[in-house]
Length: 330
Ligand code: NAX
Picture 1 (tube, rainbow, N blue to C red):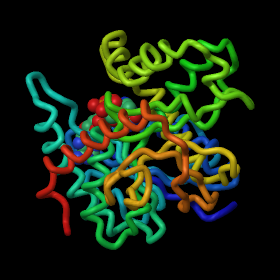
Picture 2 (tube, helix red, strand yellow):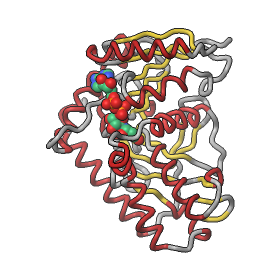
Picture 3 (cartoon, protein in one colour):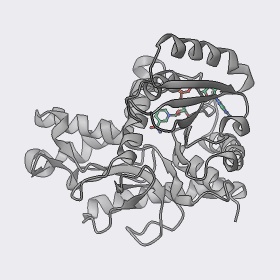
C-alpha cells in the first residue's frame, strides 16, 4: 500500500458531502492501493449529522478507507491534509441580496484560508461552495504560504452539463464530446464555448448547424441549469456536483493529452484573453498529471460572440472582487 492521502471536506454533513465522501473513500479516485483518511469538517451544530455519515462510511467497509475524523474547526480539519475540498457555505436566505451572500460567505473563506497554513505543503484546494470563484480568491489571499496556483474553483459541473446538452442535440454519446471550455464565473454569466468544442474529430459547429439553438437555448440551458434543478427538485444540485468534483480531482491526477483540455477556475496571470491578473477565472486547462501542476491553454481562437460574453463574465467577477476587497490580504 502507498502513503495515505488525507482529504478534508468542509460541509461534510451537507447534500454534496453526502455524495462526495463515499466516492473519495471507495478507491475510485486515488486508486485501490492508496489508503484514504477523511476529515469531515463541519460547523459544531452539524457535527452529529457528520457522525451519522461517518457511521455509514464505516458500514461500506471500503478497503481503502483508513480513518475518519470529525472536525468542528477548519484548523483541526486541515491539519496535514493533501486535498482541501471547500464545499460548505451558507445558502442564500429569503430576501438576501447576492452581495450580502458574497460578503457572508466571504468570512468563512477568510478563516478557512488562514487555517490552511496547517495543511501539508503540497495541498490542493478545490472550492465548490458558492460563489466559488470569489470564495477561492478570498481563501487564496488569506493563505499566505500556499502558492496561488494551488487554489481552484469548480466549473466541471458546468462543462459536464454543456457536454450532455450538445451530445443530446447531436444524437451522439457524451464521451465523444471534448474540449468544451467554460470561461469565467460559475454563475449565470458563464460562457460555455461550443465554438472550440469537438464531437469526435468534428467541430461542434459542423455537427450542429443550428446556430440559433447554440447561441440561444443551449447557452441559457447551461447557464441556468442550477436554477432549473432547484425548481424541479426543491434542492440544489448535489450528486452531479459531487461527481464533477471527483472528475476535477481525477483530471488533476492524470496528464491531459496535448490536444485536449478541461475547465477549471484558476488565478489569471493577466497574460491571456484580457482577463485581469489574480481573478479566479475558469479557463481551458491541461493537467501535468502530477496532481498539482496545470497550465492554462493559451492561444484559443475566440469569436466576437464569445469575446463579448467573456467580457460580461469578467465584469461580474471584478464586481464580486470589489465587494470582498476588504477580505483580500495584499
Ligand atoms: P448544504 O446546505 O446541503 O450543506 C452545506 C453544509 O455546509 C452544511 O452541512 C453546513 O453546516 C456546512 N457549513 C456551512 N458553513 C460551514 C463552515 N464554515 N465550515 C464547515 N461547514 C460549513 O449545501 P450543499 O447542497 O452541499 O451545497 C454546498 C455548496 O455548494 C453551496 O454553496 C452550493 O451553492 C454550492 N454548489 C456549487 C456548485 C458548483 O458547481 N461549484 C454546484 C452545486 C452547488 O450549488
